[in-house]
Amino acid sequence: MQPLMRRAISSVLDFSALSEESIVNAAAAPTNLTVLVRALSSGELVEDLTAAEPFAPAFIRGIEAKRRLIEENGGTLTAEHVAQHLGITRQAVEKRRRAGKLIALTMGRHGYRYPVWQLTESGVLPGFDRVLSVLASHDEWMQTAFFVSANPRLGSRTPIEMLKAGELESVLDAAEVCGVQGAA
Image (spheres, rainbow, N blue to C red):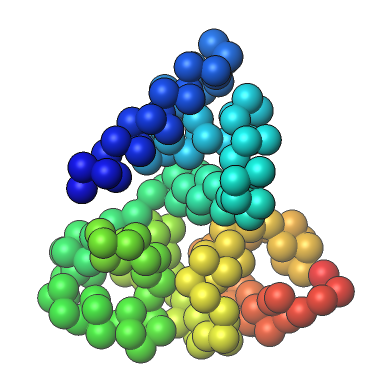
């Protein structure tokens, strides 16, 4: 652990090259890890980072995109909170996740988190499980992006909006071509 800590502290000292704007932006991040991600992706360090690891900036952009996808769409819940909301056990929530009836996002050692938007006051979005079965070949992040993004096949509305409006067949049609090149 000591060698890791020495190298990490040495790396953090490079943050002294950051502009005031980059420092303010990084410090405003909601988590410690996000502070580091924002600092590393600042204009002042990105060139050095790219020289050391060419794919690092793309990896950092991916982390930021995932964070925004979660935060801008209501956040996530633990399995326990989903179970309480649905009136079932945590094990039943996990069973639904494994069966492809709920989306759960992998959060590393923190386990799974369930996007809030898939739930309604009375349960799960109507038709949600049917749409998920069509999207089964896609990972949970692609599925999430599908549900929360405006879709040209749905009149620039999101699949969530359409499911709430009872437009299941339209959402199923859009899901059928999700990820197909030129399918917009």
